[in-house]
Amino acid sequence: MSDTPPSGPLAVITAATLLSLAAFSAPLTTLEAMTVSLGLGPGAQAWVMSAMPLGAAAGLLTAGALGDTRGRRSTFAGGLWLTLLASVLAALAPTGTVLIVARILQGLGTAGLMACGLGLLGQVYQGEARQRAAAVWAAGLGAGVASGPILSAALLPLGDWRAVHWVVALAAAGLALAARRVLPESRRLAGRVDWPGSVLLMAGLGCLLSALTEMRMGPGGMVAGLLCAAVVLLVLFLLVERRTHNPILQVGLFREAAFTSATVAAFASGAGVLALMSLVPTALERGVGIPPVPAAVILLAWSGVAVFSALGARRIPPAITSHTRIVAAILGCTLGQLLLLLLAVAPSWWAVLPGLFVAGIANGVLNASLGHAAVQSVPPERAAMGSAANNTARYLGSALGIALSSILIAGAGGERFFTGWREAVLATSVLGLLGLAAMVYSGARGRRG
Image 1 (cartoon, rainbow, N blue to C red):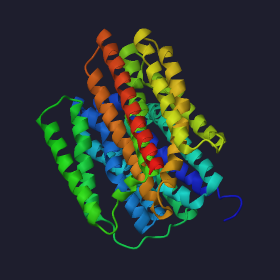
Image 2 (image 1 turned 90 degrees about the horizontal axis):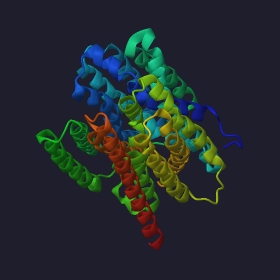
Image 3 (image 1 turned 180 degrees about the vertical axis):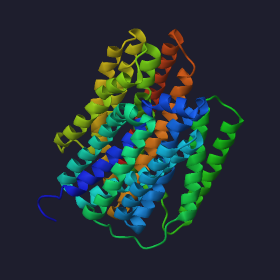
Image 4 (image 1 turned 30 degrees about the vertical axis):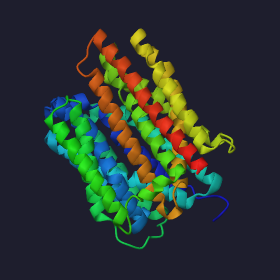
């Protein structure tokens, strides 16, 4: 390997990561336009917002297994082509049902990018160069969240809510062609892909996330049935994984403190700061009366700051371990979340700025540190599995946090809205801290062992 690592792989992987998060966050400013165009009810609106993370969470570990077994570059490029096709379907969707299916497929496509992107970075870059690459990758996460809502809002006058999906499709096509040229193929592991485990996991996570989505409309028989089905399917998945030769998730990895800590931290990040920040535009619209586009711009105080914070994370002294960085970053995110209680005291857009700014700084460091830890905590040949497990935990955490927060503020208006907002802030803060406690406990047990 040359002294100067190539820049092409990092550019393609970061751009694809940015594209994934931009597609994920685009409906924040186009949901009302989609509702009017397709006649979406409250349930369909919730599903439009949840469909893409459902597809991503359900497909990440399978994509990781495909990357490790069939080649990470091939899986990464395949994810881009699927994202292209799904985005075209979304742009042409005649009904809400078709749009929801397209969003699920977009999630499955981006699963290939998220699962194999970090694995490819770990393959191309080593040592200090890997830490720098993880920081740039993390900046792509923040840039995607920041740009998606603003891009979709800017395109509304040009082609309605469908325009952003055409842009995503064109960008995916260009990146797929570039990936074939500049990304190296990984060494393929012997053995077949664990399709029985993949089907059980995708079905189990699909039922779990569907239950969380339906829970936003209130508890009921469907929610209970979906939760029971999820438990049965996920238990069967774990039994299958213990017996298969080439599992999509090596259950034994959870005996390793580094892997468990990184996975739990990702879950805490999703359930805490990511879930609450996803609801800030809603809080500004319903609580303060700010239109969607300005609300998305205000959110830049979190997502935009996180971009620069992630890039700056590479300057943290190497003596400060990834574990210490993650602990400090989650505590910083929790402080930022608690500062958002100011919105209930002084209902105005400036009241959210201190919390967004503090959470943005901490979240950027957290993303960079988790990206590095996800690859470092598994054997090199299982880098895609490590990345997939980390991102799956993040999506599951965010789904839980968003569902709980949505229930707390659902249907609330006036003063009652701010009561619900306070409860949502406290609930997501507690979820993040519980995840942090579990992570610290896991690390302590690993050191004693």
